[in-house]
Length: 544
Figure 1 (cartoon, rainbow, N blue to C red):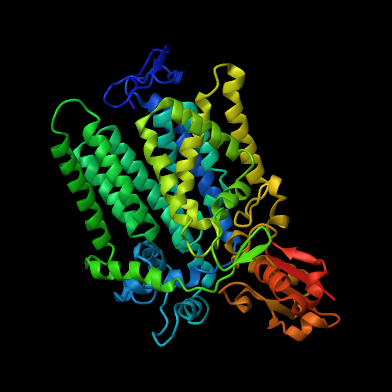
Figure 2 (cartoon, rainbow, N blue to C red):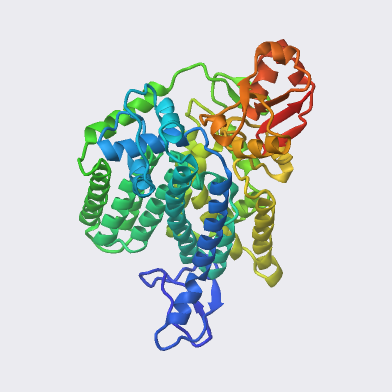
């Protein structure tokens, strides 16, 4: 986008090539009179990005310090550190190595020690790494999470900048508010798992492609290719970027007048995919093991074993639900987000702006691919689309032709901030007010939408208030409850029929839901007894 420093008069935003947009009334704003160096206008334009980064970073760090280790984190950290330290990528063959590269430096600085390789499975290896070989699990978990948060902050800045380039300053401020209050991005953006990193890297790649489309130069194509390769090295979800990249190259090649479109397209495509290929190879400790990358894609399909019972709206099925991710988006985003998204989508259609095409295309590709996912285990599988949806939703600021109608999108964004802030720092089990909030979320979705093992710290705090008695525990997670100071024994089925008087029982919400709905009579008193307390939002505590 181009705008010359002004003297306080309204200006019109233009494309980098200088072509004025006529499909909708352009966003007008007043730019302060420039200083000799132009620092004031630059700082003013950067203000939404700075605010979004600070707000997102503070919230993510607080959540990272409060949540206990979630299901994937132990073996994601341990296997990733092992990948870079020993050059052995066999521990978690189904995932690319970028996450390990990202956390290795802070882990080394924290003095992390790897366990012996005699541990059989990745989950056991991760558990021994955090809790069984002398490491401080709190410290290692926090420094690893900070590395993932840093990647997320880069994506937040890129998202706000992209929205500002398309929709102007009001769009940038709207995007800043949405980035700082989107609970699913906050939830997974502070965890050391592949979903949060995929969200950050795919966002950066899509912004890179949009940047290339705005001004299709060779160096931009190469830069976008490197970003795409980084995303491919983060998680295989990024493979959906390949058709998007082809579309962006085709658009960038033939949008201009004159001849040479084919040759220009070949140059752009060559640089784009060369950058991606080099980045993927470099992620394997600069060993360029493309054979391992191909094997990791195959491992995804080998893992897809039938038998898992998917859950949606109180029903179970061994087949995926077609509407699963649409329902998840509707109930796990704040109530104000969907109206903003509808208004922003209408604005995008009216504007016919090419810069918005990567966001819309990514949304269609990711939702389309998600429908074929055998396992409905969480909105986390579509979190990479959320930043693009934020850019689309920010277009709502251009829909108003009067002062009051123009203010409506900003009011909706403020309501979103309030609704998410009311649940802070527990973002993982967020459900909006219309869905009944976190307390009723289990009626709609389970698994990592509600319960991913994040509440052991809160359970430990609750039990400390009661004198830390020994409790019966059924925990859905891979962490060691004893490491959090929880004295526990497993709950036996006979105790579900006849609880022991004077005893505490704690059951994770995901397992509780399946015991009650699938086990029938075996669930015993769980079917009709209300919890005494709830630790966080995911562990039900009973007292007899």
